[in-house]
Image (cartoon, rainbow over all chains, first blue to last red; front, side):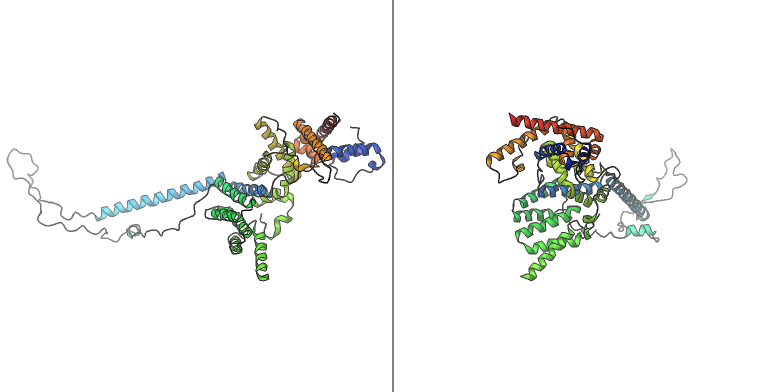
Length: 276
Length: 191
């Protein structure tokens, strides 16, 4: 390739962003050189869309998930673990206090109702003596039945702690079952599978696949899943479900990335309905 | 960063890139949307296409999502910064694979001009394949410089930031690469 004029060389170096150098109009040699570089560039046309929209969407989903994982990453997990240990410690202290209280209660209420009465010993009673002496009088009142044990209640007014401990413990209200949590890998895979179905034009199956994800605890990705579920239902012609998903998305995740589009989809659905 | 209200769409590339540093998922998603095409095209050209491209694009942006690379507004434009990350990812990929990327047969969609006659189309196709082959046979540093400056339109100075080389060194590589590709394609066309 022939040597380039400095003006042309500087223009090429700068990425051809400025207007063409004036020198070019007057110099046939530089025009030929530029044509040569353009010919070589022409052998490498733009490859177009290297990554499909569907793949791009999956990648974006993973990236955002990774970023969320980062904001809930090792440091945050460590802090969470610390809080958990504090909670465990506090629970242990409470349990220990409860155990102590219970034993305290037991001690305070331990009344031996019919302990064998030992007759007062005579001064000689413990004297070792070869002389036969009467054995100490021990009378056990076996005929009288034992009274029932006293209620586990101290006779004196209990301390607040004891009172609290003595209160009957209400069984904890049964918590509603939480949905199962999907591991990130499984979530990615399931999301990718749903997307594959959608890409293949199997809208019904895709809608089902996205809906299946909604049965799990997908954390902060729920907004994405709601949105794509709505899209899949829209493709499948399930307008009611589409609207329900979009409304759920806007209600639960009003700041979601998809919220603006969800609003416009809802508006479009509304105008379609009024048009009908 | 929140998109509601259209904030993200009016934010500059630099603002979004800076927001990525805080691990904002929406910022990372938006940056990916804006730059996935040039980054994918660049990687496609560096590795010659194929199934690895998608993984490499994802790996490039994953560096951001994992907070391994933060944008420095004083140092480079956002595209330059992303090309730098992509370059490192591709280099690492090559080293890990322990091979040069094999030539791919991904030319079918590169062929323009559907109105051209079949013989012309075949010639064009052969020429593109030769050019592609020549590009893949270039030393890595020349190929990177050539793709950045000639095909992605970066200035030699920006490409120097991406590649960690001086502007002059980059431009020499570009010139050398251009000459090599042209000679190779011309030689094979004449034979």
